[in-house]
Image 1 (spheres, rainbow, N blue to C red):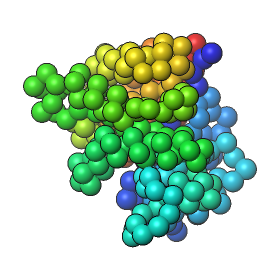
Image 2 (image 1 turned 90 degrees about the horizontal axis):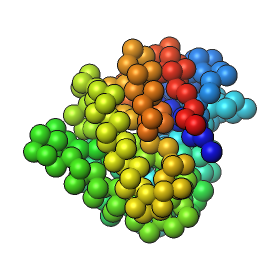
Image 3 (image 1 turned 90 degrees about the vertical axis):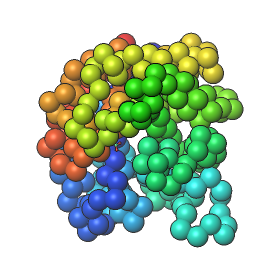
Length: 253
Ligand code: PEP
């Protein structure tokens, strides 16, 4: 079975609910008829506005985070059921900004991934090494730990996960991993997924690349055998750029 590419726009802490609607409208126009699955991930408070804008289109809705508990005394947090109730089908988990600024651990990522799957959400689980880790030859051990601990114990749910490889040194820096550098890590991630779930399941799991993807470099990255689309930050805030990135994605046999 082929892997359909998935392109997700991570809007981060940008766009009010009022400003999110026109951007979503413009994206819908840009991506009409695209081969890739397209997901927009606005802030929590813009989910309703974007849900209303994309209703009846093929564009899907994702959140940028969730809490693993179902409900209760967790001030400021949002549960998986709250996301599905808003129309979300996807949720980003373990983004490097959450790991760095909000101290999320691989155990947290695992709890969040389990909660997302239990609610029927597709988790987009982010992994990636820092520049210091890469330069001290620890890229492989960091990715191994993040994948094996973050995705432990999912059982058959593993097949529903999307993994996003986002080298921290390439996020928002304008410095993209070369297609060969990215492919090397994507192939490593697929081997790790095979260790957990077996080679057949690993072949079906989509692995996105993220880190300064632009219209100009997307096609070359997406042409790599183990790159199944992208998680897009800055360029997702411009409908024409995001549309061009979406159009660069092709299914993998
Ligand atoms: C991201 O934050 O997920 C990301 C990849 O950002 P950018 O595209 O801006 O590097």
